[in-house]
Amino acid sequence: MNILNSTLAILLATIFCRSAHAETWNVDPSHSEVGFEVTHMMISTVEGSFGEFSGAIDVNKGKLTALNGEVNISSVDTNDAKRDAHLQADDFFDAASFPKMTFSSKKIKGSHEKGYSVEGDLTIRDVTKTITLDLTPFKGPITDGWGNTRVASVATTTINRQDFGVSWSAALDSGGLVVSDEVQIEIKLEFIQAKAAE
Image (cartoon, rainbow, N blue to C red; front, top):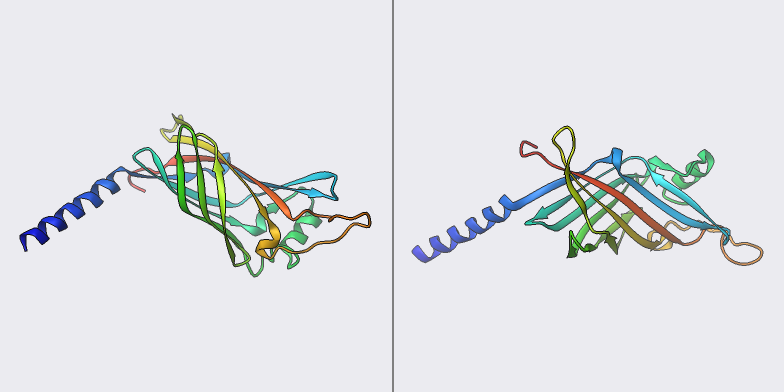
């Protein structure tokens, strides 16, 4: 019984120590951006972004341990109201049926100084696929005028929209597609360390 109690005490102490070092940093949406770009008619690039999103990272002993995020599909903005409405329709995201896009990390390699490779599940239209985000080396920490501690990084990846059921397509007479299947994603992230009271 004594051995069992001792083992339990060590386990609890280990968990407590780990949690004591764990930190949560929340995305500051006013200083972040979820952007994407696709090729249009094989010759040009169309850029867009999502205006409503949230996310957070967990850091333990100076190392990134988790990254999670959520995007409101109806906030898509490509600087063209007609195109934005089409993107929200069933041809593309079907925002009425699938209002959120989410990412949840599963495996993380790297460091704040050298950057990270973050493997995780991306879900669009209720289709979940494993993708890898590449994060640049973290900048900061710095303290702003209100006492908030901040860090920043940029996450990038490339996906095939067809993998997620975002399948509308039209062929050009000369060959190729009106909208490319390949989508390049760039997420500019600024995080604020959560206060202990939060």
